[in-house]
Length: 136
Image 1 (cartoon, helix red, strand yellow):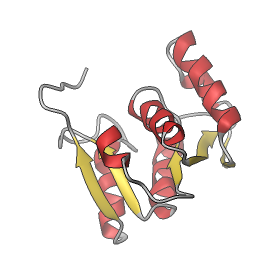
Image 2 (spheres, one colour):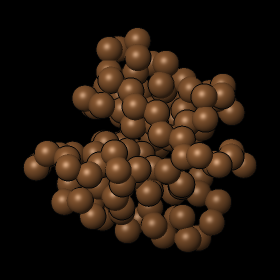
Image 3 (spheres, helix red, strand yellow):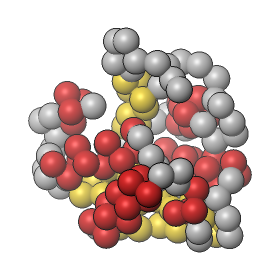
């Protein structure tokens, strides 16, 4: 992901939901490169969806560093909220970087759904899938 972000323009804003894994790695790389963050929060109690204290803590830390924040109107996290948040990320993006193995989404609002949506909207999509990577 660092290679995709190297040489980015000044004053670039990375749009992300700050989900555990690739979203948080993207946010860290964006900040390290001098970019700013726009956090799209899928629901009011989104932090309850994090499986580990470490991921939840990273989410809160990154959220504090976000320059912009959008919270969707869903009361709880779930597939509808994740789909809407992913679509919002795509709608706010000139280029969508997707860490994706090319397989169908594991649930509604997964990467495959958002890549398809972004392509339908005419957003440039760049797929990142490092050699040897596997989905858990």
